[in-house]
Length: 440
Ligand SMILES: C[S@@+](CC[C@H](N)C(=O)[O-])C[C@H]1O[C@@H](n2cnc3c(N)ncnc32)[C@H](O)[C@@H]1O
Image: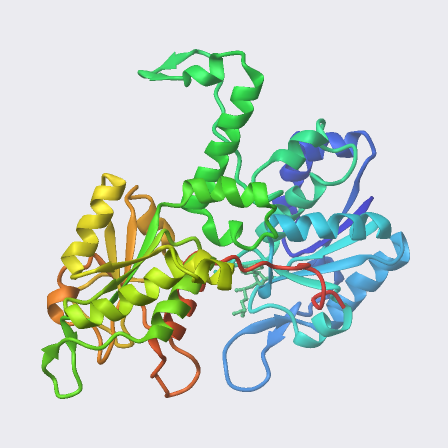
């Protein structure tokens, strides 16, 4: 594999290319790198960069220098797979590296283009880049560190570079999970012992423990990654064990009413059925309907009797599956107590609202880690009418950010909001190929 590295700072790469596995890959002839100093390609007494056209102060590398560098490398080593580095590019992750490795391997010549200053004339990227990659959503002074990071990542997938390819396949992010905790001797260090099970010699028990630990670490700290995978049923079960128990309540008292008063609201059968179905889909343990009104409670109970134990079971078993987890309660306090009794721990209570509220810590839909690391059940509170009263909001630990679209309309039904909230908080959101539609 030939690797052309186009840079203004070749010295940065020299020790890097000689060290560790990359150094060994050079010695064994598995890879051959050609460091191209872009400064060597400037005409005598001419600058490598020139000012950006139009308002602004930045300097860009001239397109003809890049052309000379790229085309001469391709005449020397054959057509290359050309990767440019820019914060505007596609973010590098393990899935992308894995997909890209065979493509590059087939080409036999990879060219990495690291720029500096404000970057490169846009037309150069348009003309030559097969892929533009970013190291993350931050700006560095140049593309050299991203190029080196990429090289370390991609070369792990090239045959003959990493000794045990099995370890590459088991590392964090090669699948849905991050790696499990690992230990070496001594058994006790600074008062910390290697867990008994790891020392047990029971391979099956150790494997199970490792899977559970990996699942737990992933759920708690990398849920956005985990939910981007097409999980098997077993993987879903493993993840589910690590996700704290979730509950939802739909409040019909202590609500803000149209005229500004605080009062009760009527139950609606659609909100019982539809939210129950959403809750069942996303693994919510119980969905509580809270009303202090006896007559309203009777309406709910009639419906629950039909679907939970009556003719509803045979009439529509899927509906039964959803409605069997619905519980009628008299108040917010009742809901919290029921959960505490069931779980042995008080729930973390998360309010929802179409409006922004001050004085309650706000959660984004990607903030699961903040809540789940507290190791307590979670209760999501939905309001009716004009939303939850201050009396309820004061008892909540967090409030979820309002659901918003790119419009000025903000009047979702509570059952739509419930579906969106549950999907954003607990749903799987599978990604497909990282390369499709990106490669030129
Ligand atoms: C100062 S940056 C230019 C930033 C550019 N004007 C922008 O705002 O998108 C100079 C060069 O550093 C490299 N670079 C900086 N941040 C990077 C990142 N997060 N990923 C990949 N390359 C990066 C790119 O090669 C970039 O052209």
